[in-house]
Each structure stands twice: as structure tokens, then as C-alpha cells.
Image 1: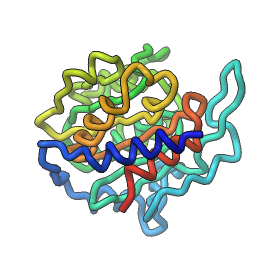
Image 2: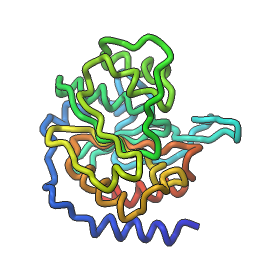
Image 3: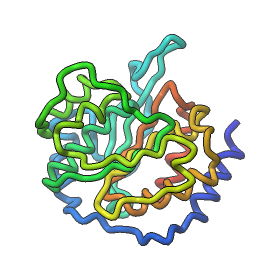
Image 4: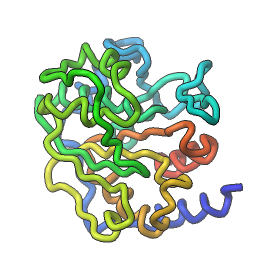
Length: 241
């Protein structure tokens, strides 16, 4: 069903060689992986595991439900190094909080976020926002948030300096990337029906440039918003070693 589109994505990804040089992460990646201990499971959130490659085994329970049904996600959220680039994979987008807090814990610095998504994820958090948030509170923070309000939840913590959103057609026509360390927040639903506001030719160069220059990449598979088999194949294209 998606064979032709996947072929086009793979071709554009291979052809996209941004003028921006790849940036080597300016932090100690080994300090990041050390947070997973000898059993390669996060020492503070057992949902996250360190792997050599992504495992797309589905979850035993739905990760997301709406009026139309329930959708299964991943059996575990994951961190994999691709050429020393830390790349996180999870289902619901609010789980990106784990990657934000791990990166902040290791660097002790605030950072920018480049957010590429079919949605702005700018819903207001319904509770009281934290003013400080430590890594050992990450699992609780994920439970407290929804899939679209995690930015607002983190807004008073000082962890994120600026969010560069690419969520509308015009954003992809005149893009630029931060000249400071940033995390790429990539929702694969940008390739789904709700992300059809811009073409593959507009999406791929920005995603490739952001991938190459980000310190950390964090990918949401967004069950319920895009076919998960299709999402999996796109991610495989982006992470071929």
C-alpha cells in the first residue's frame, strides 16, 4: 500500500545532503548510556531500554484510545546509538520528556527543540506546572501529561530555551535550524494524513538537516495518528546503519 511512497522517502533521504555540516554531539554520550546501568534499563523509568537496534514489538495493552478505537504502541521505549547519535523511539509523544530530562541531566544546560509534527502539541497542561523537574521524576511526569501538553508542562522548568515548530505548511518553506545544541522532536505522523499539508520534497530536507545537526533525536510513532506498519518502515529508512 505504501511501497511507492516509501521508495520516494528513501530516495529523497539519500539525496538530501544539507549544506550544514553534521554536528558531533558536544556532550559525553557515554554519560547518557550510563543512565541505563548494567542491565540496559533506565535506572529511573523501566519503560525505557538501551538497545543495539530498534525493536518494534507491539505493546500488550493499547497505548492510545479515542472515539474510533484503541491503538497499540511499543512493548518498550528505546534508546539506540546510530554513529554515536542518541536516537530515542517511543509511541505517545509525551514520552519525549524522558529524553529531555536525560539530556538535561547529562549536560546540565538548557537547550532548544526543533519540533517537526503534524500537530503543534501546544495544549495547556491541566494541572500545576512544575518549576523544577529532576530525572528521577521522569516516569511520574509522563503519567501526568497527555500526548499534546508536554511542552506546556515543562514551560516553567527552564529546561527548554526555545521551541522551533514545523507544524504548518509555511514553516517548511522558510526553515532554519538553531546554531546552538538542540533536540529533534520528530513525530512520524508528519507523514500521515494530517501531515499532508506539505509534500515529501518539503519535509525530507528539513528532517535530514535537523537529524544530522541535532545532539539528540527523539521519535514518536503516534499510534492512532498514522499506520504503524508505515511508520515503522519510515523509521527503518532513517536509521539504516
